Image 1 (tube, rainbow, N blue to C red):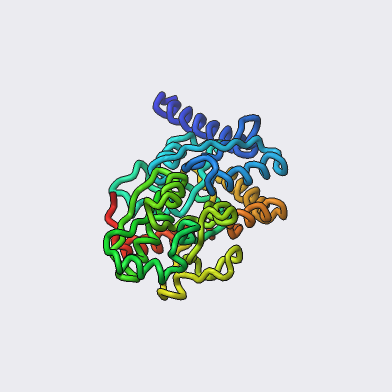
Image 2 (image 1 turned 90 degrees about the vertical axis):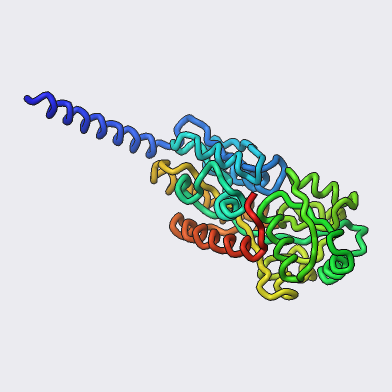
Length: 324
């Protein structure tokens, strides 16, 4: 027999064997190897707490050995890139966000990943808006008072930001209200809250999940929310949309994985995620943090992320933010 033909047949056989082995591995997933959810932000933050609630469900209800690993830095870029570079074997997942998958591509001149090509977006966990907050003893009582202050002291009113959800809303306010305010970049939300209470900055937009505990503890005072509807946590706090029509900014949290991860694994993880989000105890825990839990099928979530990318593109453009 022609040796080229034999070589070709051996190649086909090897390929078939590898595909079969991969299929068997996917069917037996996760096996004895633990599953890791990488959180691209600081420990104790909204994303971290959400990931730990999902991990708790996977550990206790689905009997999947799940660990959470925090990799903060650069607005979520460091942790996201780490997951992109991980093996696509169904054992590394990203706690993905509107920052990592939608907004960052418009906020940075270059990224070490392509969200639309390097990841499979598996499923939604929930959505959230942001809340404009001031120090509890601040004379600023509402959004109008903040705008009036900014107009009376052009360039002397400062806000802090650390992510797309905290950077875009104040810049949108700058355009909608036609005010001269300045932003200060922070590495994490903790430093923002410290400087806010210390009077170094006058206000910030913080995601619901991070803000809730601080507001409940009397450490921050809410003056407006960016969701389409008032937040049940603070029903008397007006929406930015009610003051400046069209001023709506919402974020989300979900689970993504490197492209190439077996479809069977993606489907199984989507099923576990939907079960977690609809589980009474898990849902109540997520809701108590300020998240609005929501489950989605794989295709529906993929389309949501594509649509969300266009929303953030327009928000960044309207806010006139130049990529860093």
